[in-house]
Image 1: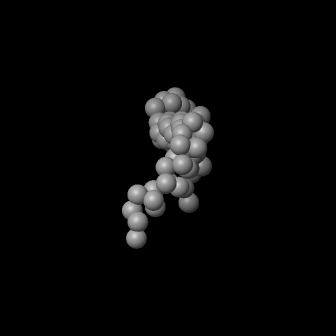
Image 2 (image 1 turned 45 degrees about the vertical axis):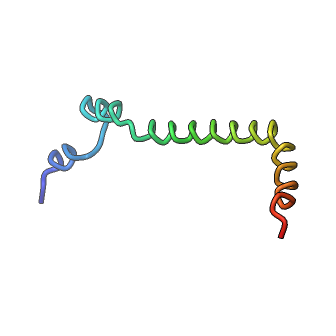
Length: 69
């Protein structure tokens, strides 16, 4: 049977090494950056649709007239 100290030595806890590793970890930052880029793209798309929406609607309504069957 192993002594309790060897099990405790491998158990996760608050140590300087674990704290440094946690502070260096940047996996969540990448996910946050992708989320921000996606949000800004959605805002830009909605703004473009509201500005150019009626012009695009008119364009696509007149498009079949340009190519008679």
